[in-house]
Length: 508
Ligand code: HEM
Image 1 (spheres, rainbow, N blue to C red):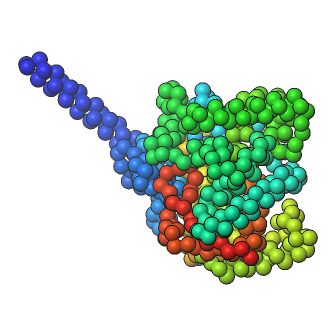
Image 2 (image 1 turned 90 degrees about the vertical axis):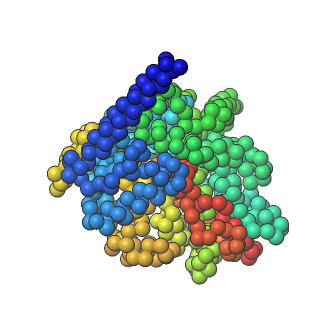
């Protein structure tokens, strides 16, 4: 009894001492921005300024927008925030944003994400750093030119037929349509076909393996989102414990699919106008561009990782974009009708066919897509890491090497200084006149600068194809089953709507 009491007292004392040490250390780290005279939002122990995101109560992009709004109201040109006890620089002034992502890019080449080198599929473009990133980006860039997009359009356009068949079947049921699901299936088919060279049958087959794989990557549980944020905050510790951010069976599925398809194509000398073919070329015949990259061929592991990122980065972003666009069009019948008139009049000049060129001629469709990406950017913040000490121009502040940077795209897109009445869906925000009168960096759905989205052209083309095909053939309205007002999901990798978007569709 005596010994038990003794041990209990010691354990309590040890626990209290550790707790005091932890709190004191955390409080000391929270002085970082104050010491540098940078405006900051009071952090809370232990999560810093993003406690709602860590607790799964609010999507991280929304938390960052709230910080943006608060600091902007106080007139700050920049701020300092904390993720756990990690200090993050948070530029608000658009000239500061421009400097970081373009003008002074050399100081901010990397992202501040984890890179557990032991986790398969992580050696992709989005995660690579420094010279490795530059080499890979230079090798991959030719795969995304307008010429290559035009070539690939045929592969994409094939998937239109299955989309229309699926819509026809859905309409026959005389029930509201879960449009997010239909578009996720369409996007799975397009990206699966272009990145993996496979017919994924996601629109035909309710239980398509690829559709399930997409779900497994993006439908994170609260715990998985927490784990990913932890990995972002403490990359070294989580790499030491070999924590993975993608489920093991997804990794195995992707490895198996890509390796088998490559083997099949190499054995049978098959050639196809898709990304995979271009990756195979980079593996077998490295391009000769002396001085621009290391000239080395891609390894099989590198090819698989790039195919994976095309799927992971392109699938949810593009299908979310189309879902939000149809939601807004269903709510704004006048805009939907104006778009339909444009689509039909352009198609009249192109033999009634949706082609690569006809899509380029649909100016208003471009404005609708731009406005959707402004209001609901799937990637609502940008991320960088300072790799070389950086003096902020015009300020008495030096950003130290290793400090992370977060830019609130959602905050900028809802800033009344750039978009009067920002909550209103208004494609005229992107008329030539309005675009020319705004700061160039007030619109960042694909990021900017050398590290912007490499798949922008592909994502836009695929989304415009899907939208043009649907709006031409169906009239959409909101079904009352849709949760309104629309709310964002609290977890997950991209900014998406909470719950299903149910639409009524009427064949035209
Ligand atoms: C509507 C669709 C899309 C949106 C909104 C989007 C958005 C973004 C954003 C915001 C970034 C970060 C840019 C930055 O840090 O400055 C990014 C990076 C990236 N995206 Fe996209 N994306 C889309 C579609 C795609 C597609 C279709 C692909 C591939 C086929 C793709 C592949 C990538 C890759 C590989 C990166 C990393 C680039 C690098 O680090 O060099 N994205 N995307």
